Image (cartoon, rainbow, N blue to C red; front, top):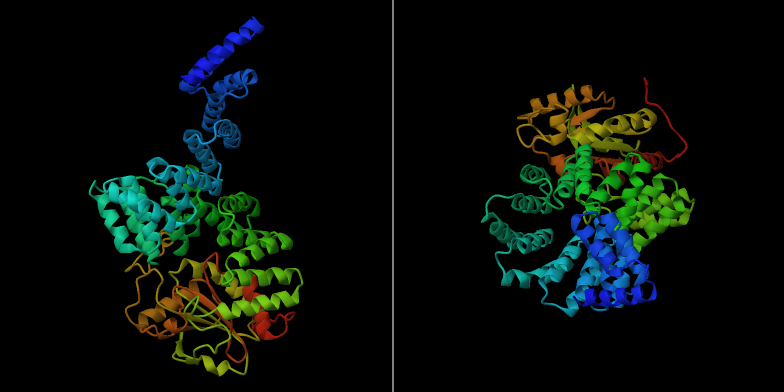
Length: 547
């Protein structure tokens, strides 16, 4: 009301000075009517016309910010809100709108900082607390979310929005029992996508990705637009070997929320790995914008720049990531590759040494880098011949590949592994170790296998496992020798090889390199570089007999 009275006085003044000038009061009334009618562009034009007459009117700047935000012009909206905030410092309504515009534009950290200021000034304001908690949830600061929302949950134990956000944070922190209690609160109001999403999140946090996929699918059937649901579904699909399904899920998440960090990061990684760099770039940039201090985002940026052969930019991103997380095996491996591209041999050696210290049980169970690989004697496929790993020691390096036909990642990697065998098979012993099925149809069937019409039951005995191994090598046209792990899975466990994995051993049987065969983990160039180091002649390539 005070704004309108001020506008009326201004209009009278303007008419006295210039009788033909347009009435400011008419302008602002017209702007508001257009805003209410949803004609945001015309409303924006009317507000701008008014502000030419009265540039310091707080309400007009604030309302102009509102209509610009409705038009999706968040940077312009932010500029108007910032002017309004300077003209009326401390006004929480303007602060909330400014924070929401920051959030919509992907400037989550700035939104969070602003909401924190507002929360400090008015700690009892529930809306501001919820907005701050939402930003912390987006930034992955789950402890802060818990700290903010536990008092609210105690005051309003039936508030489903509080229960959902708090439950999500608790599950992420692996506080499963507390999270389950909030799932039950939500379920009291009937089955819902939100409850199933939280149940799936519990399974995801526990590492049971197949069951998580099923829960997320059931949640999507109820409501595919629950925030973060498609992103979690995509991450689960990616971890179970369905990168195409993951990319589709990430895309659906971003169609609802372009600022979802996990979806931007996931698409950036998939597209970078597939060398679709032009498509990957906006997702890489958005991930870094959303969380500029995230080591994961910086790793994605470094790997993107590496794929683009921009070694200096890759170095900049990865060195920043190393400062944030100096104990990341991936960062040291990626930096070693970058320093190699820059021909910085000493720096490369330092990074490989750091990676060697981190590799092994602390980061991944199985044989530690530079340790002697566990020996085994296993039956060959197609014969009763026994193959003993230790017989190669002192004679030649070895490449061990572990997998099964029902593992989509193993199937995808098979042609590349066969090409490495074609290059180095004379001087390097290649061996496929067939292990238990990754996704046997008598257990959990993967979405990727369903699409590919692959339906193979788990082997009931060694004869069945031999048959599966023979079928696998024939179907994938794998030319290097294969052996079959026992029904007890002893070798698989010794190498922590399920669902698929590869190792490069030097001539003495020490582990030089290991990798999971997922689309994001398996890099053919890195594995080939390890094979060359094992051979001891980086420039030498040989073909196995008969090829």
